[in-house]
Image 1 (cartoon, rainbow, N blue to C red):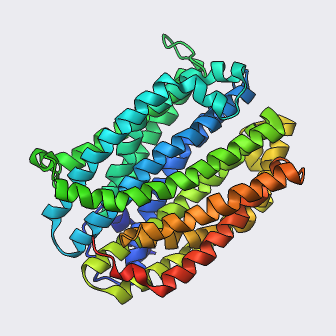
Image 2: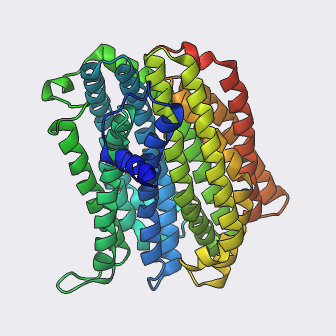
Length: 464
């Protein structure tokens, strides 16, 4: 028992470790434990908001607004994740080559590029918040109700980007503990502020749905301050000096080369999710939309820790390739697949057995609950394939081969999932249920294709 406790302490401490030398099992677990907790904390943001707004007077409008806004923000997440993939791949490769200074310079350049892109999109979201909600299928009265929430969340896109991106930098360096702690801090603040700003407390007025957006934004901002301290001030392996932010166009070109397909990769997936959300709203109405969004938030609560575990493969592939340990890189991926399958099997059983209880925690409206339970039961049939697929996708990204998963996502989501969802829901009259069925079907196809391409091994030849 003492040995396991010492291992957990090491995983949480942020102690610098050479992941190319220790056993693969230890390397995967030392990275996966804090990465899973980090992603669990990211998913808590949406669940906390959903819990509190689900108890507001106009809960149907509120839940739909939170869900639709998250769907739109997923495009911002895509940019942040795409840029963080470039950061992780570059930093991990340089760390594997034992060159921390160049790793820090690469990190600074990624931050510079990302900030410039995100600030423009953030302004667009602030100006057209209400129109965006209507475009997503929200009724005019629901859009008017939720526009301030959407405006604040879209306006905070720069903070969201920094939170994802800086954590990607630390993950590439193998310091997953700092990434985890930044999300802990952000969530603690959000959990404290949510009831205060939504319901009011003392001199603080009740702000309703707008209060949820403010609480989340303030929490994330404090998490970013913690990250910046460790990135700019603290004595860590990655430490950025201000001169590193001077544009290095050769480095920027390399970043864009890796990040562009990475961004498209997640934009493709995000646009598919947006289309599905819009399809549910138009074929099933407000209650179906609220139920679907509730199911998605629950699904993501468990998906994000699995994604965190799969991030271990990204770091290990990058660092081992930097150390010219190709066999070890591949073995690390397969070990991570094994652990993610076990995790996703457990999640599937939880959803099958406790779906009614989990949904009831967020809403007591019968029709919304029925749609949410139906969505959960159908979507979880593909969770094991989803778990395998996300590890393989992260392995490609960690190697800097961001084009392969981009094309896999394009065919899997746009040429298979979207047409399938459309025909099942509209032409076959299945409504929202047809959309739910398309989700595990597409994830299974994506995983099979990704596994075949991974075994071919072209990713081993990528230079970054």
